[in-house]
Length: 384
Image (cartoon, one colour):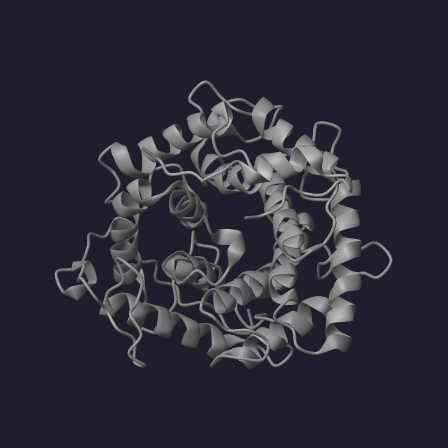
């Protein structure tokens, strides 16, 4: 059976909260053109060999299901991101970074801190610090939106991912002056997110323009990260977002693209799960049905050895499915991670990057690293 938190603490605190907060928590450079085979099978070497105990270079015991090849893949991926970061802290020298500069910076920053780096500690502290400062400079002091221009007409994606990243980095920041600037930016960004919510409870690519699933889960997870960092998040905003996912649930148990469309979307369904858990919906009928559908596609239908599930947006789906299965418990994680781990190791390019969903090398690398580093447990937003 799936293991849940020992007590429904989040739901209890939600019921008694007086402040309206979230439930308390227990190309300048073109990417290489080659695309790896997304259905590659596990390698015959130690990439697919689980060992009882794996140690890092400092003699620390590594997490369960880690292998020496896992460590090497992570090290190569982080090195690639560090080498391709621009002096201003962004990744605008890559194809995807030039198109979505703030989104790629936020996702890369999350990959660095998922490996234990902060703005002042770790081998990539300078990279985290530069990413934080770059994103802070993109925050609009009047509107609260965090984006560079309109980011190809999808402002709410960079806004959501950046808000999540800044909230996760907030408690790691040792410079009190910078922390105060971050505090102001985060509060204004929370207000913008709340104000931009549609009447149905979701969000669309631009503020106040409608609603759809992928943007909605981005905002919901960002708001959870803000709550974890001690910021007040309106309870009504969270409940309306959960309600939106509920009205978008399909007979299969998954989530459709938007309320105005029907037909289940596997990647969005996978993305909805960690957001439902973040909102305290561990054992709700909606969460259980969604988990059953996502698990049937990623684990139980015989295609768990295939990275692509045939629904498109493969890296995006795996990124969220990994979070969902990790939070759902060992029964799911043990049947999921070894296969996706080996797939990612085999799909990694010689220079350390992954070309995720054809978007580009920064996107694919940041998402892949986040998946591989979940067992490090450095980021509460990704944890059980």
